Length: 201
Image (cartoon, rainbow, N blue to C red):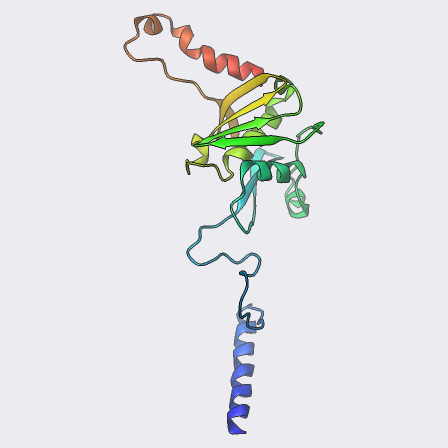
C-alpha cells in the first residue's frame, strides 16, 4: 500500500516537472519505429531542402523527413508548392505546370533531370529551383551541394551541367588544359562552354 502511494506521488512529481519544462508526457513505447520527427540516435538530420522564391530572391525551405530524400522525391515535393508555413513566409514557386512527371537519374555527385518538355523553354528562375533542390537532396558520393552537377534533358535538348551556388544555378565551366598554346592564345575559347550553356537557360 505504501509502495503504491509512493509510486503515485513520484509519478505526479515527474509529470509536473516535464510539463513545466514544456515537454508533454507520453506513454512508454515498448517497441516499434521512433516517433515521427524524432531522429534515431547517431543518425544525421534527414531534412529535405526545397527552393522557392521570396521577396529577396531564391530561398531554401527546410522540412523534416524520416529518411534522406533523393532528388526525384525532393522535386516532387517541390512541384506541390510551398506549404502553409512557407507561404506565410512569403515563399512561392515559379515552376510551370509540366505536361508529365519529372524523373531523375543519379551518379556519384551528378543528377540528370528528364523533363516532359523541351528543356530550352525552361526559364532561368525555374532552373534555379530545380537545380538547387536536386543538388541539396541525397545524391550518391556525399559531395557538398555546391559540387553536385545537375543536367536537364527534354526533347533531346540538354541544359547543363549546372551547379547551385549562392542560391542560383550556374553553368559548369571546364578549365582549359594547362600548357596548351592554342588555349592560351585564344581567350574566347575558354568562355565558350559557359556562354553556350548559359544561353540555353
